[in-house]
Length: 303
Image (cartoon, rainbow, N blue to C red):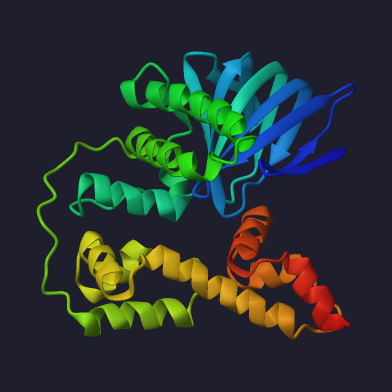
């Protein structure tokens, strides 16, 4: 049994002469990992994220209940791996793009795209495969490949951060369309009656519960307002989105814990306790916010 770690997740691989080569570009709300497999059988539990596996070469088989079935095939089908579901895969020889998303981020995006008239399905109810011959899924495959190539090339010029947002938004929108597949409805204008008191309640709730797996759409529903209304008015009063504020709260919580650590504290444990499920994402955002790596803060506090 071999264990392979990386931005694509935590894979347990077992096979003689197996080979996995993975390279990732991180667009913040979505990671794109190109993976080359050779003679690999893997078991994987995605944790709090979910993935769309887009085959570029070869096929991907899944074992469930002792029965093996092909769930991804070049130019035909992509596989969907949902949070907290252990999956056994087998890839003889192949190459694929693995898109890693936060489910609730994508669910929020679907509500913005399609309106608030229908809630997105729970993660466990998502389809196991996507038909790449449909317009949205086919466009997702093409744009994922383009984004991966483009951002890697732009890294050398220092322009990748400027270009990343555009690629990220296209991929998030296409993934929401391909997965939730609901007809678009008229959205209308945001309700201006959402005053500062209501927005403050949302802000206070996020601050108090930032370490939890929060759903912005559910917070809006509990307040009796549409998601878009909350997002627009949150930005109006606080100059940031609810999700950006959530990230800020989690970073501040992690910073406080790293600055006053227990003797045996580890960066990974502190990040998880602050609400982060992806350690590489946490480290990148921490450095961007505070200008130093989390390990440097922890090391200085222990001196």
